[in-house]
Amino acid sequence: MALKRHIIFEALRSLVNPFTTKYPKRPYIPQEGFRGAAEYEGDKCVGCGACSQVCPTGAITYEDSGGYRRLRLDYGVCSFCGRCEETCPWGAIYLTEKYELAVYDRSEAQTCVDIPLFECTHCGRPFFPSSQMMASIEKVDETLRKYGIAREELARLIQICPACSFTVDNMPERRMFMRRLVR
Amino acid sequence: MLETIRSLARRKSPWIMHVPCGGCNGCDIEVVAALTPKFDVERFGVLQKGSPRHADILLVTGVVTAQVVDRLKRIYDLTPNPKFVVAFGSCAVDGDIFREAYGFAGPLDKVLPVDMYVPGCPPRPEALIDGLNKLLRKL
Ligand code: SF4
Ligand code: SF4
Ligand code: SF4
Image (cartoon, rainbow over all chains, first blue to last red; front, side):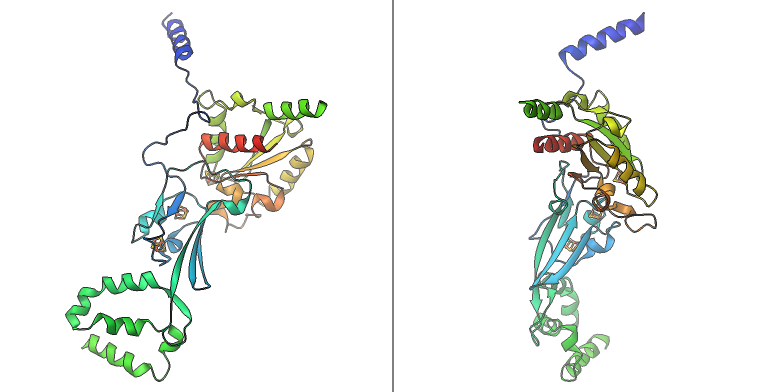
């Protein structure tokens, strides 16, 4: 009897307030902590590629071309785990609450960010994200002060691409610099 | 005239066949959830069918494994025209976490022509409704 009353009560209640979602008409608001599509914050990202290193599915790839490093996140490969957000030292990638990702074309299910590359002061070849260079110098600022090294001095040394930096005429300067650090 | 009736009927009653391949089952559970009264895809005339001969839409979930390729092709051939294929979940779209596994036989679009990609791991039932809506709009 109690069950019957319960069923009738439920039936009447759902007449007034239906149980079914109104989804396409009314948007669905995800729960807090919902892991949706990841997005880049272009001006924070320094292009270090740490996110692509930790991504368990290999959804994030990057390639350097035309003076830019292009990081590409493929939603079709992503497992929405949030490792990239956890790892990024600059808080430049985060999971949004976007879940309506259906597309007609595979190539649309992705997000990209372009980071300008620094040009080698010797050969002019772009080789390193410039914002990462600035950020790294910023990070070692205190240590530099400890050793009495000017920022510009370090900047000059790391603005040379690996191919140029080991040439005969560049080696002595680098070696002198290293010697000051291990003193 | 007959054509309009036909296309209207098609849009109002897209019957689906759920084809689970080699995924983790997460997506299958979301598809079943979409059929429950809470999400109720029957609102759009969607019926789940057990045979490809009754279906308009093949809803493929999970990673396409070497075992399942031939069966998938056979199921596709058994489906009457016009037929549509939805890749549901990152696994079906491009292998997700299994893409370097030994049994992985390529993303779904290498085996069948895919009309709709729904990335997500697993996608929400709302994402399925969204995907079906977008697909029906294209018909
Ligand atoms: S998003 Fe973060 S981890 Fe990824 S390249 Fe940009 S700064 Fe590095
Ligand atoms: S959420 Fe996980 S799988 Fe997706 S891009 Fe980030 S780390 Fe890779
Ligand atoms: S996409 Fe994710 S939830 Fe769906 S079958 Fe693959 S691993 Fe499982």
